[in-house]
Image 1 (cartoon, protein in one colour):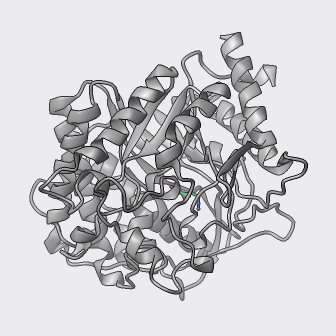
Image 2: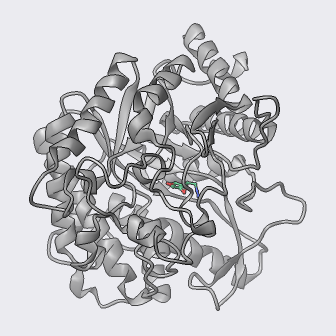
Length: 446
Ligand SMILES: N#[N+]C[C@@H]1[C@@H](O)[C@H](O)[C@@H](O)[C@@H]2O[C@H]12
């Protein structure tokens, strides 16, 4: 491992990541309003086994214990998200001071333990009251988001200097409004372009506000994949192009070039009546970093029946995680080099990378060798990216804790710390112990 630590720069930010609805629980406490995920998870048939985020990891009540565990493991950066409905129960208007107080205390606890916060403003838990006014289909939501962001900047901005506006707006758009497998559970492809635009507009409005208020760094997190054609056949090459537009450039292009990719119009035609003068200039404002969530590459073949005109191909011999995703760390290097050369030298933070595997508790330990190997392979791939000139500034393991995995409930475990959901006991997995050793070596070396 020692050789690996030498390949990362001194100030590289190693961390762990979580999200509010996935770990906090306490959904009806201290004035929190309902989110679309409260409604969706309580809708029969939406979540595997009928799981909900009502309790999750009970992090709302165990925050100090969890922060202390991070510190014991030598973790010095923590990415978490803020629950908008804890701050504005109705989405706007009357603030909820007890909600703000929780994140105030969390921030202070982190700083006391010398852990640097990286705060995500939106990790999918829209206030239900705004959904009832149209949610992200309604352009007003972008402005309510701006007002929410300003409130949080004002409360925490003196101690939090690293911000992410949105986490994976592609998932909110596609899983939430086309596929219906995520909240708000809509299957309306005709609104997808509008939803994506309003999410990006809200991003731009928050960045613009932060530039007036804060001196720190702000970016957006996108879930991105390198896209490989399954063969050199013309149709598979076309599939690669369209799938790349649907999964990657739909969001990369507006954020970094102020345009939407033309290929997207073949997949999701739209009349651009929802794009107002100046929107795209707002959206393409300079950022301090791009957050990249990387899990696996996409290998595609032509399939006109799919929305991206492409189907994913898993090679028979390639290893997969329990999500069915291929394990291919080189895909991370390919992705980062593509971003670097297509969009310029924007600093990059890997805001999520990790793997779900079936974990078994044996004598109070979890020997998750596959997850440990997955992580180490991706650290090596990250070092390769840096050695090829990509300015990578940080890496956050998804996830610190096993947690509520959206439509899959608690059936998938991504944590480097195991959570016994019956007792709420935390058990550091072998992968978490290995990460702790790696961090110790890194800080000792530097
Ligand atoms: N699935 N999966 C794991 C992980 C999910 O738990 C996060 O909330 C998302 O940001 C992203 O999809 C990645």
